Image 1 (spheres, rainbow, N blue to C red):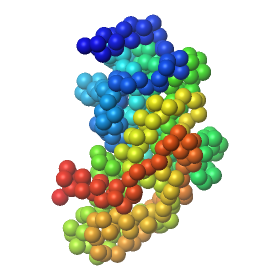
Image 2 (cartoon, rainbow, N blue to C red; image 1 turned 135 degrees about the vertical axis):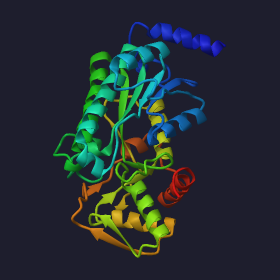
Image 3 (cartoon, helix red, strand yellow; image 1 turned 45 degrees about the vertical axis):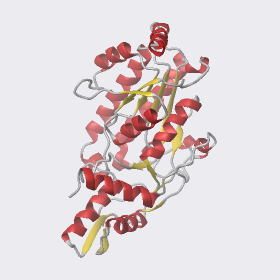
Image 4 (cartoon, rainbow, N blue to C red; image 1 turned 120 degrees about the vertical axis):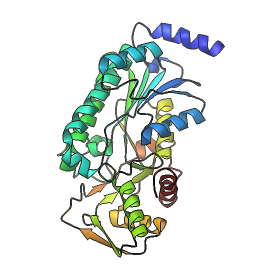
Length: 336
């Protein structure tokens, strides 16, 4: 009961507008109520698990009850609940095929969600917010590993440009609330993510869940060869979503700067090497072929994670183990 009274008092103090977290003794107090926007997705579900495991209260709202693209409804809900913090993990996401064929929702839906949640959080006086962007915000030919300062220094990768532009707008919006209102809002750029809760629909999935599904189906059919998109030469970095969630809670607790923070593991591998690992996990015994007429995407995308490491973060889940656990999760929930 005491805790509820303290929360009520905190809500009254914030009723008149945002209260910058930098003036508070803790950036994320123990037992804080954190609204996770996008809690059913790969990232949001992992953040909910992590917050609850560390004693925080995760607030969630289904899309049927609250469409985050609706600015007025989102503002009303946030004013009613007055969380201590918001993690903006809600987004329209997908792989190369989805981005190339349906750029409009990747741009418009993400812009609407971001404008709605950030403006609503500010109107409700939420003192702390973490916006999650994507490593695709960086130029196609950025220096490797990619430092946060590479943002807006060159052309984007054409295959996911609409999504990247929306995320860049979100970073700018976070910066604007810091600059104009002194809000302790921050942004982070995760690398390629995977894990339980991922999307395995081949039309919308990213590369790793797509590989898991395709190798599984090829093994089940006894196919002598599986032909994959591209050349297999692009290099990518992969982080388990539970490691990402650990990083998110750490940033909410310890980081309050205008510059975005890269979230990754600091190591990469070729898509061909990734395919070989997935083949071993799934148990496919056929050949792997490549279709170079299909797009490769960005040649290399490895994040510079020194800023995050200085805060004490290090990933804990090795890639092979993470892929195996993700495959087993998919078999239990969706696979056949």
